[in-house]
Length: 156
Image (tube, rainbow, N blue to C red):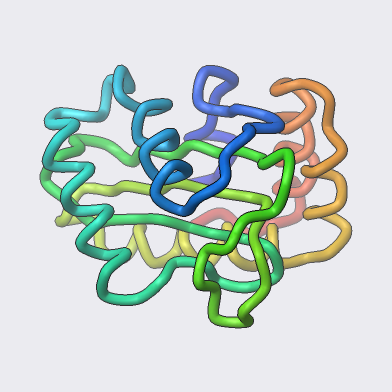
């Protein structure tokens, strides 16, 4: 499963103007509200927030990856947003974030969930990819970037 297979223009928002972690998570959830894989939006919200309470999903290198394994989705759901200005996300490296991925997968897809988290982390963790994501001017540019980057990336 590739990022480019899960992400579409509809679930990408560029240069969001948000100032708090809770605003960002709420916005990310609203972006996927009408995703065909979302069965129960309120349950998805609860599960993402529950996971966030356990430990911040600010994974470092200016990236936040709120996520959940949940029966609120029937298929993997992925959204991406860039922020106009950095915000505090209580990241593990204590640095603010500017790049947000939201990932939700069905509970029975644990292996795929972990592989997708790893794939996003490894790819977006590269400084050149992050820089390019922050400079894109269209949602199609984001999709093109992942398509290009995943050409040589092993399929999961």
